[in-house]
Image 1 (tube, helix red, strand yellow):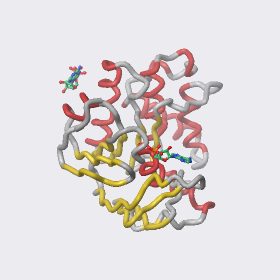
Image 2 (image 1 turned 90 degrees about the vertical axis):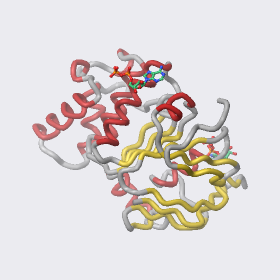
Image 3 (image 1 turned 45 degrees about the vertical axis):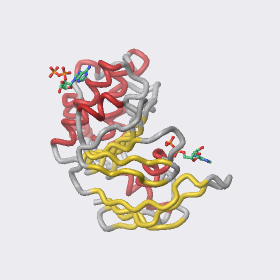
Image 4 (image 1 turned 30 degrees about the vertical axis):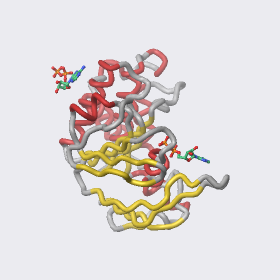
Length: 228
Ligand code: ADP
Ligand code: ADP
């Protein structure tokens, strides 16, 4: 599904964040991306949804070279990828319903179809009863559930999460992980950068460790491998 070949990224300020990545990720996999701060995890992940463009190399997603598509094609690419962040990135002036429906509106669906899809994803994340609330009326864990619902409402085949439990307490983090497990079990590929040692070592999946812009370890059912 995803293949990176000789991918390098040097930021305009001269920082070489990624120094030559070669990796293949199959459809349906669950992959943790681990490594120290500044290792290049976010850069690795951002290049998959074209938030950053590699300086050299190729990134193929479902046969499409996304490193070299035109900027105007990027929104189309992003439609097929769900992205989740540590800080949720919800729109605070919109309700839960509107935050999720917003992701569908560009697809020009009818109001009834939008409503049905929004309620379906809210059901999956267990938040149907909060549909009319605003983000600031919700706990951090609930806000992250809304962000997950928004990310999957267009049924993407790929979900990318950058430290989705980074702002959450341990119990809430486990609840959020159950949702990612569920999404993955329904066939969606999940790629997640995380510093959560307990989660990586307990809910075992493939682990890709990045240090200094290089993949230093890549194991099926791997361990977190760092102290914190
Ligand atoms: P991680 O996610 O593992 O913490 P990042 O990919 O965020 O690592 O960062 C890798 C390196 O690239 C770090 O040295 C960081 O300071 C640098 N970096 C990240 N983003 C930018 C940017 N937009 N401009 C310049 N340097 C950046
Ligand atoms: P349920 O509500 O269905 O009992 P839990 O939230 O208790 O599910 O746990 C879901 C999964 O995460 C289980 O495999 C459980 O063992 C694991 N888990 C939950 N909390 C922790 C924790 N604090 N430490 C380690 N594993 C945990």
